[in-house]
Figure 1 (cartoon, rainbow, N blue to C red):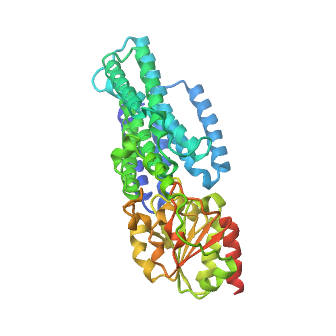
Figure 2 (spheres, helix red, strand yellow; figure 1 turned 45 degrees about the horizontal axis):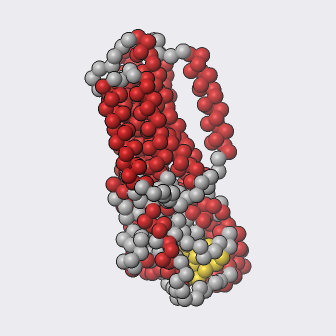
Figure 3 (cartoon, rainbow, N blue to C red; figure 1 turned 180 degrees about the horizontal axis):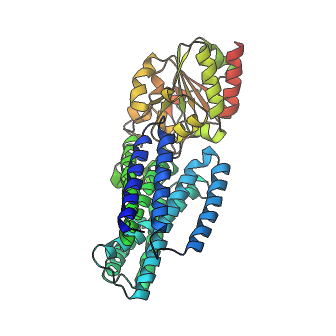
Length: 464
């Protein structure tokens, strides 16, 4: 096929990627954005397959069939509550693909005695390094999210020194492979070090910081794809990888600001342990009595309210209570009560987790209000309903300078006239510290499964 036509197809695909990403910035146009990006990817794939001598078509078709079957099964069987784990795995697959493509390129060049020149050796090194870190880092994130391993930070003696030594060894392997890009032994050494580094970078990170980790690993997968594009001299892959890498870094920065952490903390895996260690200080501190209410008790206050703000958290996701929450909001709205949903950037286990769950339950987009916009509304709000959120509504972040989360932007639910918190127990959140909100005079606790409690509350409001 004519090279000019191939490049034109890549250009069209790239424009669709950009427009798709732009549309993903709004819930109303996100579906269209996904469709545009998918069409762009289809065009890029077809154009690549038409390049003479690029592929073995039977193998490619077999890969498409097998991959499509796996994708269909995953898409239809994975629950929305498990989407963070799915995203982590997809990031890892992207990293694995970059490593495999780099390895195939090295093997083919060895057979042809074709020593790469220019930017290609550096791109090979970047593909292996970033792809390897992304693969194992994503697998560790998946294991923590799936509770296959403990979510608390994993530490051991001299951890920072060991990490530094492995990082130096990895840097040395990068330099050597860049000088001898067709050395398979060096390639294997760098791949092994990158895989090990991915594990070591993520295990010290606690479950509370997983949204940041997922955003960062997503960026890594894009950067790895971009490097692979330079290896293959594929402009579409370079552009799409750059878009994913850049958007992932921007999202990572947003997540860091939302958790009051610097990007440097994330990049060097140094965060998480400090918060986890602080939990001991919070345990056993008597902060006063807790007021426990039943859904029937709460229905009285809800029925007499004029405005309600719902704050979804991971407890809502675990209980799969989003549909029950939407039904409650419809009941309240039918009674003339204004209902909005307060969305914290890092509520849940991945960026946008609460938005995805509420959109699945058909909650109107205009009711989903971001933290900065809704915080000024809490003092004028009659009832704030907290569903399994903990650290993102902890007033210690604003009031207690000794708290490990001090300075973290929070949803200021404690300023509402009445606060109802639905939790299974008084156990602390991922940060491992107790929440003073639970002991405030205007806070009423309702203990139980979020879905069951919300259904009972909805029935009580209807019958009040």
